[in-house]
Length: 319
Image 1 (cartoon, rainbow, N blue to C red):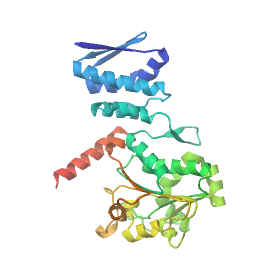
Image 2: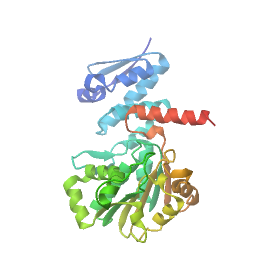
Image 3: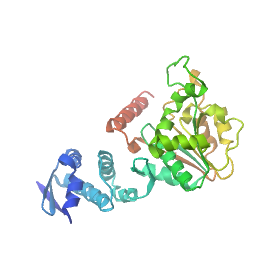
Image 4: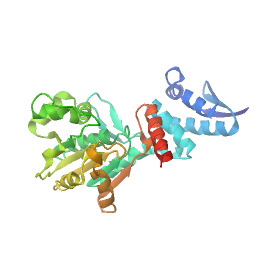
């Protein structure tokens, strides 16, 4: 049995590291088949030599996050373990700090993975950013957070959020109500993100002033959007014609973010996706960034990662 010790400066660090009922340490013990015990200012990690070495690297990385003011969660513990397994745990420090936005409930919004960090940096430094990847990687949520930040800093005068009104594999039939009520179900994820950032009352106030607009993609035709932060969500469900129409709405002083998942196309009759098209057409153009997420960037329940990997494996085996 091999043993390694890690010194802890303050008891608060140990409390934050272990978490409630050792919830942060248990995943490390299970992953590397080690035993982790804290006695006073010292932590003892015991097990097989290679496993102890990796577990120690994971613990030291998490302590580094704690020392930089980060609180631990199931997600960033799992992500740290994954980085250790890839030999990249030194990169986890880059995720500390850098708060994008504060929600209406006072919660800081931050990039939680290296892919999310790259995506946020791309949006800040490019006029058009295309974010492609599986569900749960924060593509829309982070884009909305950055839009709210730009709006609060008066870098833009308006936030425009749009998505194509395409049903996800089922017919909804005739919906009751006026035109806005009919399209609201398609736009609900965008509303949810804005409510989270601004609160319902503030959101409503900005909508009435015309500072925030949430509308189906069809409403964009014929417009020029100046001084705006424009987000196109679920872009995999645009046709090439719709994508071209959307891109040509770009006005002076504006930013565009296009998000989508090319594995979840709901277009009828096998029609070509405008998102797939644009990834090829706009490749290599200055001031247009393309960021691809993987299952490693999923920040929802850990089973979402496993589901995405299982589907990818199934697709590869069927080729």
